[in-house]
Image (cartoon, rainbow, N blue to C red; front, side, top):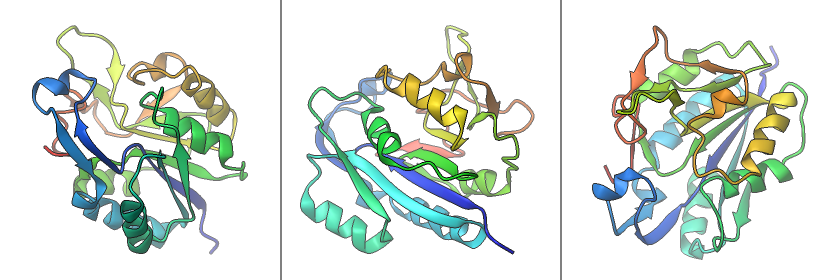
Length: 216
């Protein structure tokens, strides 16, 4: 049986020294070094699982400031189809996403998994992706809702899954506005949650059953 096509797009910094988050996490983690090579194991496991079920293409979309030795190491470990590079100066959290989606061709029936690259992802996170039925192609998929102290209607924005169709067009349109986050993307695009029974995460930084933002 022919395997369905899937792209895995890993976005953001692969390496960045002296980084302080722009979010409230700066109160807990500041002035640290992002290093994908310190947290790549979960991504490698996800890649292998996806390859068993799908015809997988893998892309890294990162910044032009990434050291060459980091790129070479990632290339050897993952053998991706391509790297995309974005100017870091003047960028926002989703600038690297804009670069990738502007470059990648449309492939009918292809599903895209867009995932932040500076996380420690758990087996449970991988299982949720592997076992979910992404059958509604007219939807954007995210992990779950976010609980926050202001009781705002938000979703976790570290993962987005969508097909090459109008959803991709609409998503790219929102990305081109250079938002600081996508916690309210579900108010712009029809969105479905992957986690069952209205499961939630407290916020992006406190979703430890599924992922932790490095270096947590």
